[in-house]
Length: 185
Image (cartoon, helix red, strand yellow):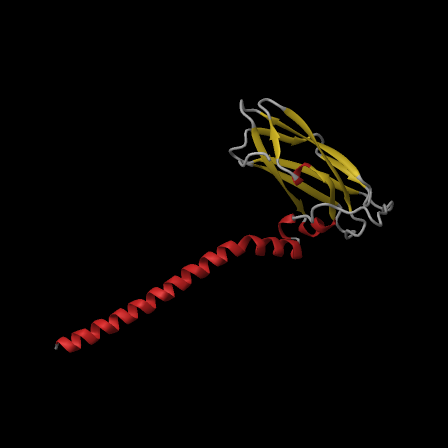
């Protein structure tokens, strides 16, 4: 009887060890999956134009202006909780010719009594217009830091590519400013 109990206990230990290894693999795979989500999401957004992500800094090579049409570019802004700023575009919209370089200003004001840093994240809609919206100079390229009570005008230089489909007549550029806690370098 003792031998039967011993073999049963050995079998049980072996099954528990196998279960433990399986669970360890599941945990490791889950961690790997979580860390790969951001790069996979960025790749998906870049390929499909999902979430209106733009390509970053634009090149002015082969610049041409399409004089045959106008595009209305609208600007919206928001400040995420935890960032003590007011942030808004100086003008709600602008009419542009595709290929024409424009400059618009956004205003940020630190409404706290301490130094506060933020980072702007842009989004373009409709999604299919995101790859045609080209930023030349943007405050969103770098972390912004404002002193207590400081107000700053922040320029955005951009153009809409003449290659944008003709059926897109309105493009909305939205900026969300998030708190950027790490210290300045």
